[in-house]
Structures are given as structure tokens and as C-alpha cells.
Length: 119
Image (cartoon, rainbow, N blue to C red; front, side):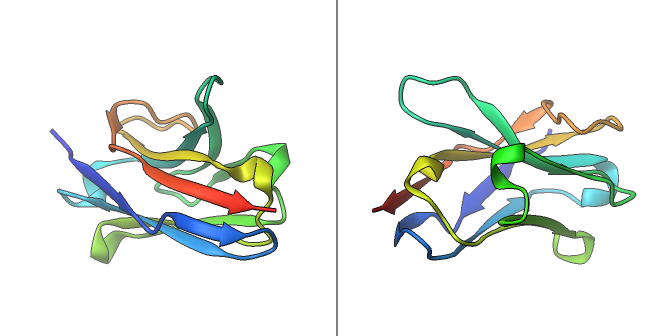
């Protein structure tokens, strides 16, 4: 079993930046894919960005050029750097991990961290 703990959420003004972190309870070498999803009130949970062990990445169209996902296997941590934030980025952000080679990780989930972007 893998436990994921997110941090780094908060309140920021539009145009600002935040960096989310997701620490895994075991070495990322046993995990292939990691990713970030988000869910706004009344909406479905959508994939924002993901990264495989080999470094392949996926970004939702709405965040391309603004968000960057990265992983540090030595620290068992995945990051989501979010720049030029917009009010529509407001949501609970969830970290996810998968044992398989996929860009839609779903095996394990964190508890979520709130990101609020004010206009």
C-alpha cells in the first residue's frame, strides 16, 4: 500500500504561483506513474498532469504552458509547479499514483489540497 500526502495548496491572487508537493510513503521506484487531478465544486475530477517513471508527461490543454509536473525519486516526491494561476484553477487538487505504465494514474490517492485563486 502507498500513502500519498499532498501539501502546498492555499490562497493566491490571479497571476500568482504555487507549488504542490506529493510525498509518497514508499520509494517511487515501485511506482510507475504519478499525477495530479483536480475537482471543483459540482464538477467531475479531471486529470491535470501526469508523469511516468521514464519521464513521459501529459498536461491538460487548460494548463499547458503554465503548469509543470516533476518527480524526485530520491525524495519520493512529485511536484506540480503552477504559474500564472487563474480563478478557474480553483479546486481541490489530488495526487495519484499507479503501479502501471500509464498517464492516467489511479491506483492510489492522496487526501487532496485546496487551491483557491482570487480574481
